[in-house]
Image 1: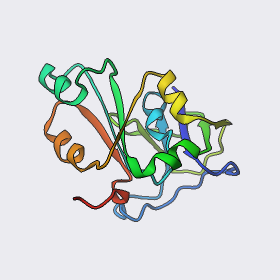
Image 2 (image 1 turned 60 degrees about the vertical axis):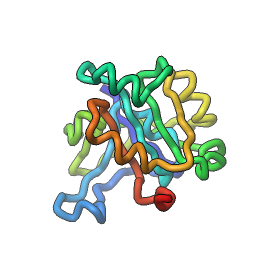
Image 3 (image 1 turned 90 degrees about the vertical axis):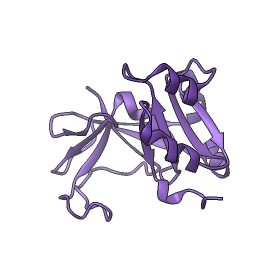
Image 4 (image 1 turned 120 degrees about the vertical axis):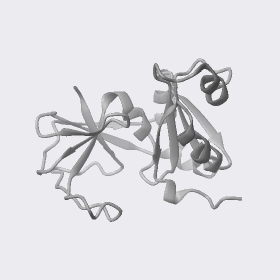
Length: 171
């Protein structure tokens, strides 16, 4: 299993558990993402996005509703106002040994460690949109993420919503 952390900072030598301000009921942790969901992080850190994908339980109706004529099984939707920043971002993918990590949310691919960890390797990622396209991940650019945010929870489509506090206000 491969685990990663994505950052715009190329100088992180050691990841120390941190307390998330919106998760004060949980202990400080180091966060990582598994290889399967890593594509959800090929974006600037603060970029809001709705990531969704099919699984065996996804109904034909929901497949049609959320994927339409696309053959993609994984889509990431972003707001149009972020497009220039997405094009220009230089990301660094830190890889971790899985030993100190435990699954936090299998659906979203989140893993956590409760101790400091050092990365096993570091790789610079340029042209993230090109990397997503090459991996068969569809990127949808939309004026607002709010319709997806409202519709996905009652569907059979699996999803992860990231940095939604940074979305544009609802129209």
